Image (cartoon, rainbow, N blue to C red; front, side, top):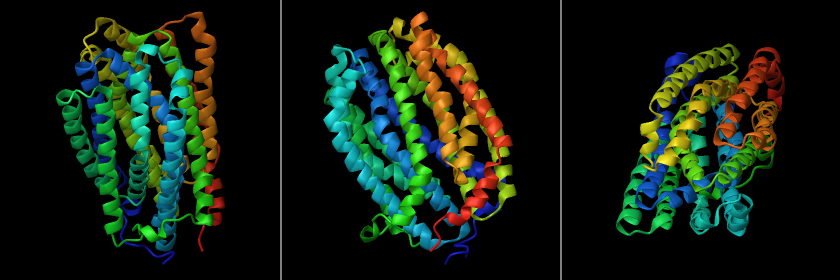
Length: 458
């Protein structure tokens, strides 16, 4: 019943730093396995198929993220809504939000599949993908899009579980998914020699396994977040609130993808070696991003549930604690990356030119990752309280807009990979400064408290 606790909730009642770590580590380990199976794809392609195949798979990531990221971003609005209702003990509205988010997953998956298959070649051509890797890149994209529905179900289902404080089940699912992907990679690529097609098929089949496991978990529970197939539909009032919070996140994801497409196009202009180096860099620094992202997911859930429980002092304290832990972890990992970038790059390829290009890029990136922690934690906290538009605008103008301007204006004066790399520390630092000021001075929490009465309650 609304206003009544569903059960004792450690997120709203436990020791903050302990509960943050208990919630954070399953997300981190799960994201590690997600990054691991993506990395296994890259390693196997680079070592057993060649650097052209490595470049082909690597260049598709920004295109896939453009469509997938938008719908995952929109559905994140449901995660915030669910966490707030769960924190308030409102089981009825938890159920309504859950079934609306699953309907969004199905609709989004269908749209992405159709649009992706129809535009895959055109998008690659617009990105300036070299002809020598076009066929492999197109094959990877089409296979991925054909199985995108499983990816959407998994992402939305994971968001539901994390919203109610369960970060362990997504971990178990990702471990299973990773193991399946590794076995299928070895089978399809090394044994059957199916090349890029084998990598794509292994990825899709592993995502199907993860989607099935998540649905079994959600359909098997007796709690308010249980999924019943007959109830999967759009609730008009709930969808309105989901879109209010999620649409800015979706648009932000699109802007990130567009800016990354501009970066990818710039990288592509340097040739296959640069594309291969960029693909390897993406997998290496992905391990740093997964730490920041795990902290960001954690603080969004913590703020959402404590905001729903009206524990506003706990909201602020959890943000301070999470920020300190995220900075410590990110700085440590950045140092490791800076001093061991050579061996890490050679893990993907032994091509000397590719390793040199990648090393030059990482020397610029590694010292600047810590600045993004402020963006990740503060934006996650503000969204968790229900204010989504302002973080989106700050991020889009600060990170994405400046990134595009840098590539279009600054890079032509010094057309090198190093100049492309410099866009990251410049845009991250500028955006982090704006977020620090906004979080400390702009009374975002007061506005969210005043607006909270408009959240669906009937």
